[in-house]
Image 1 (tube, rainbow, N blue to C red):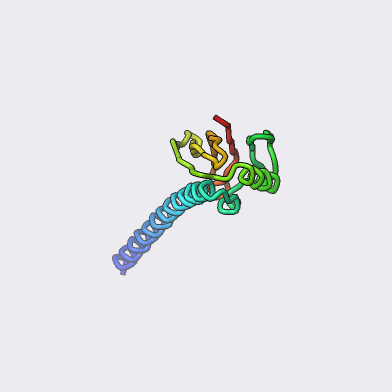
Image 2: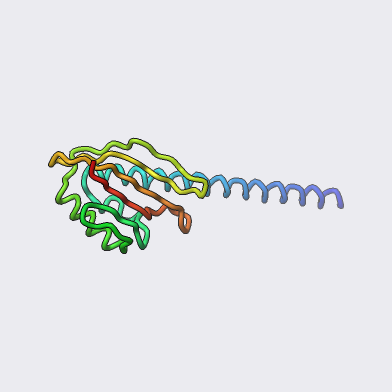
Length: 144
């Protein structure tokens, strides 16, 4: 009888550990999908000149630097500022030049945004993980 209890206990312990490992792996995989979703939405939005494609990924406040606006603004102000930017500088192309991450887990993307009016802008996006999701906290468009 004692042997049966020991075997049952070991089986339960192994099952608990297995479940914990599976849950941990799912969290890691989900974080990767979240990161890739933000990158994909961002790239699509810049190619289309459509802020709504990545507005869900914006943090509550954003350091926004675009021609005519350089400030820490609310999400709504950032959306309006970017809509105005895309209206004045409709996209002809967007190319991601570089991306990376820092020790604190932040992700950055540097690219080149070309507009139909012949102007090119170096873009910089900084994302930080907050409450389990990556949020865009900084956006820069610097004319080249």
